Image 1 (tube, one colour):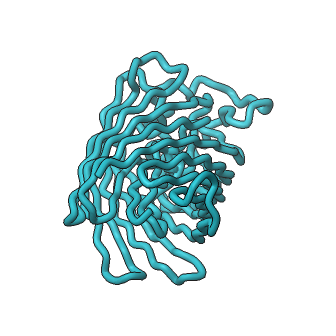
Image 2: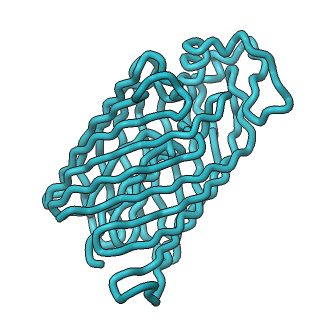
Image 3: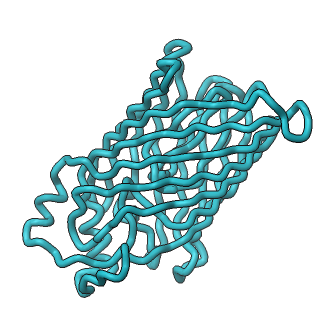
Length: 298
């Protein structure tokens, strides 16, 4: 397949994106979203992509809610052949009261300096239901700037995110990945398997943790040692520490995808190691699983 545009439906990504991931990572066939915030990106070909994603828990720049919330997302992106793109997405957190928890709209520009250096600049606006249980609900806007460098043995991505709204935060994410593509077919000559393991590091502030804790009354909880996402007592200086720029998360991600000319099905496992956790959220090492289907029209 000569062209492929893919979507990841944070989360972190991060999740995106899940939401458990910051910044978009490109492969040999196109671009996947691996963002905590849900930004999209594209190859330079006029097309429309749509997809749906299921995740076992919502994460935002290495942080999760004390309550585990699986989620579903749907996304649509329109790409122009000049590198400009616009997109929209809807989130439903399973087990939360609203019919829909979040709607996002955004746009950006995908550029290529040479065969080895590519980048994306994008803006996303997030709209949340008042009852949404999404940890990123303190951030209404995100400006994302990402560059990727292909060293051939490894691909490195460096992504900067400035999020502002009810709280302001800045994040820097660094990822290393390697792309593998099968030299065999499964059903016919038009399909193939891809695998792109990655290691990612997230640095930043975490003022959104304080807002989320206040909004959902987590200050009234006590630590539960039997739950990996229990609540820990609040240190007196947590508000000051949340403004400091520190390492937030290290994670390993293992996505395996089945690809055909117009669609991809991907299963991904991520192991997340949070560090410097402040405020009322106590995050332990956690495993995440995502299942994604996306379809390309062109």
